[in-house]
Length: 472
Image 1 (cartoon, helix red, strand yellow):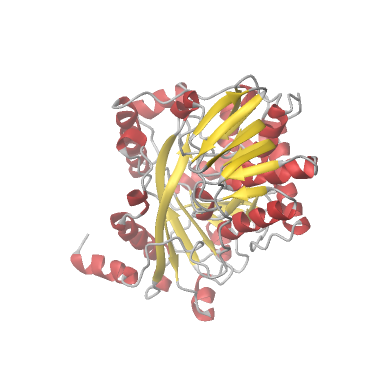
Image 2 (cartoon, rainbow, N blue to C red; image 1 turned 90 degrees about the vertical axis):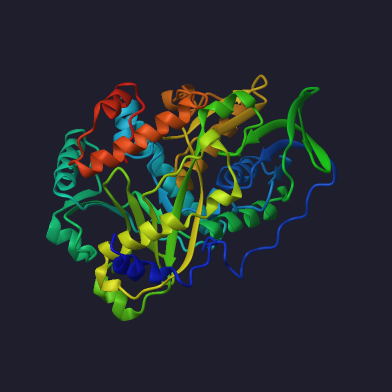
């Protein structure tokens, strides 16, 4: 890259704050006090992100008399739940393609359950007055290369043959640019109902508020340190106290699971995003985007982007950084070299926005598993349930995961617990240095495929055959 080009793009980052935009909000609620002393309850929920908050809320909705305690190591929504792009998708399988490949016999039911889950989230937003800028805008997958346009058209035809294209429309170059005016867009696949956009931190904060209103006892700055059987139930130790509970639901996702054998199934992959200043009316008009859909491009190393309620553009993705050893550390949340790449890509997509400044830049860890969609299970003779591995599509799917965990803890056979997706686990990741080597080789191969017309090399084809292929 020429120095003049570099300075042109990086100039937009001169005032950027290395903090998540969503969490940089004067309306952020005060944390609840830490637990000091001993607690007892019917259900203990560990984790104050979406997974734990939905579990606590639904548990109280199912049985208002149930005593529910929720522990959060920091503050509700501070990790992945407050740092994501705010895309709330109906898909429970990390997209239809991944689901169709892995669970072809269940895919219709999975699609129906996912659509129902998104509808339930929309109803919960209204019922509990969850002030989170919820918009049922849909999403467009855009092609920026000729081969991607062909693949999108072929995929749409395959969806139609399978009877799974309801609400999904193929857009040619003229049609996609009529929706959003980027000179890089060549085609699009428009899912009109399957995605909502929202403010992710506000969703977490308002879920906490709804839990408190229903009587959930929430303790923040209270990490759960150990999990052990205690009589007929379980006991969790915290820095200043302990909780005894009949049942425990673990919604800790990428953080070390209290059931040690679960830890090998996830690795952290760090994702990064930029947020612009609010666009003026003229700048917004220059790119169209009047229908406010979420957008994502079709490359393996993809970008996702959307408008906020105050007409900023969030621009994220592309780099996916796996730290050797799978460690989750605060210093990985900031990566200036990735911000410079993202700024370059932003202005390539929207050259008419040159001069726009970025105000916030941040990163965070995604809990990735080898099948790229959540897995579920129980431990300690059914007294403990867990869900993890959402791989970046957890804004909506965590509510479904909460229902699954509660079904499992109740010992119920339901439409959810009978799913092959729920009953079977993904392959665990190998120990180091094999995990780092495999992930690095996969990333290199995906970048190579993007540069060579989408052609997948021998490594990617082998991963596909093993059920470890990643194409989005």
